[in-house]
Image (cartoon, rainbow, N blue to C red; front, side, top):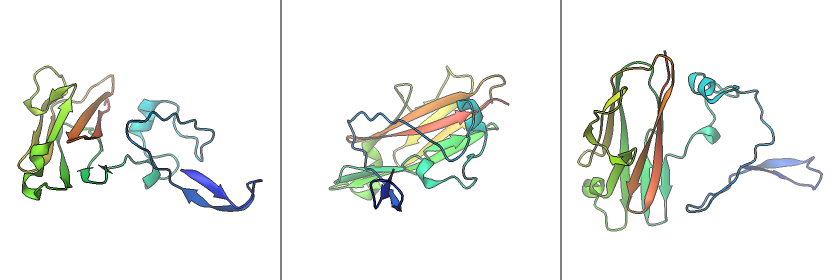
Length: 174
């Protein structure tokens, strides 16, 4: 996002313009100011509501869909914070040229720690199940325990054809 002004002195504010990000490019973002004081650490920010807008501004949310012009990948829930054991689900949709909606799931793969999400997870103390169902287009994750002295963050990579989205999943300590 960038602010647009009618004059070089930046006195006559016109509005804000979104800037498109192109995949396969590396962007460096320098934050020079903030409207709110925020939180001093990442862990505090995860555990608390947005400091600048309790209704969570759309500019701060991850993009839930991407497209290359021919195909579109949509992950309905790109962020989740679990504070109690239980299940989390996220519908995933993929569509485009020559893809029948009923068969779009066959083009999608979901990975956690470079392993395909295909059911039971035996080597994690907090998550015991993560599976993407190609028939329903639903990613299901089961949190079996909540950490006591640490926050645990998981990144699921959703891949469809050449489109990739990340789903960030956090389990804060109690």
